[in-house]
Length: 267
Image (cartoon, rainbow, N blue to C red; front, side):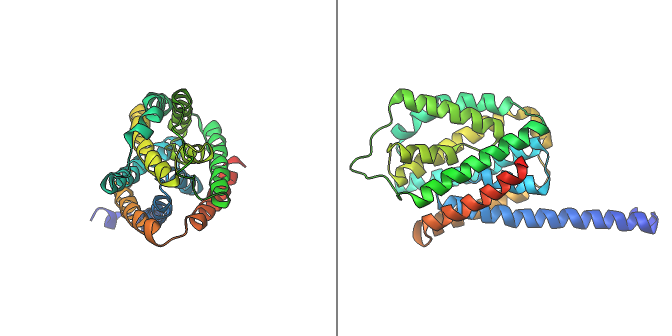
């Protein structure tokens, strides 16, 4: 009723703006869902993918960081639940990485980089993630269960802390960095790595989101819609990835998408 009294041009402007916002929300919902499917299929939660999409869509740094962490938290929780139900989760493999990962993620979450710093830093993180993803796609599919060893305690502490701070600062969760480290160092099989990184993502995303509390008011109001989308994608990805899809192809596709988005943010 109020809009009906406005000049025709203003009325049309409000309608066009509302339609644009609704269209962007729908497109991002579908895109987030697909990202969650692909990431969950390879045992990840998708933060780097969500950040890549939001970077292309022109989100502000704090909105990107807090939104990605919230979405990552949901998918990581689903992955953790799947591994718990399947009996594949070993807390002995998780806690050495998480014991310092949690506090350093809180510290990283509290660091808010200015836009001219955040975008290049996140771009480099995405490019690095792409290279790591490509490396695991073309390399051996998993560690040999007969030769896999427990990670040295000190090395696990340092690894968890460094990845926790970097992932907390950028809003990337950390699992996409931890998985290649575990596999390359032969600290576990592919399944063990997926279970460990799922819990690490869950713990670190929660910690970083706590640390970023000052930026919670930057979270878009569409977040509940996107949370539902990634939850559906997380369930679907975990199911499809464990039964039908080639992990190598999924990782290759992810590497290409992350590389393109990272280059765009840097340049």
